[in-house]
Length: 109
Image (tube, rainbow, N blue to C red; front, side, top):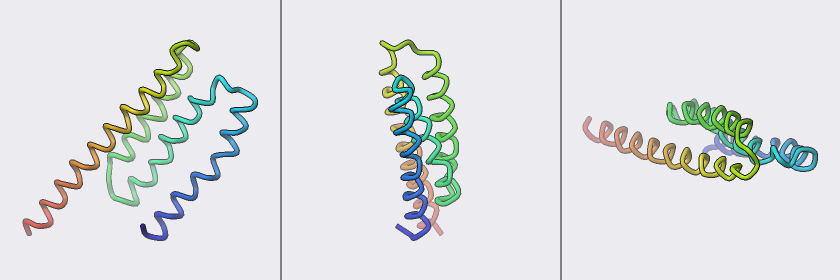
């Protein structure tokens, strides 16, 4: 990974104090906060890798996590995790298809 990519990865570590605070003070909102932060951290990678999938899914994950976290009752909060897994699968497939498309275009030249 390039040095800038490593810096973008290390930036995630600075979110952990906020997560710990939420875990201690408002544990009911920990999963929602974790989903929002996880989703939002993908946004800079849209620019770094020139891939729209990261930007779109950053918004979908963050806003979806917020809306689900505020509307789900306690016994259905596990759906936040299911939502996150589904979004990560979509993102992974999106990036893979994009990679295949870009690699075909570069070899066709």
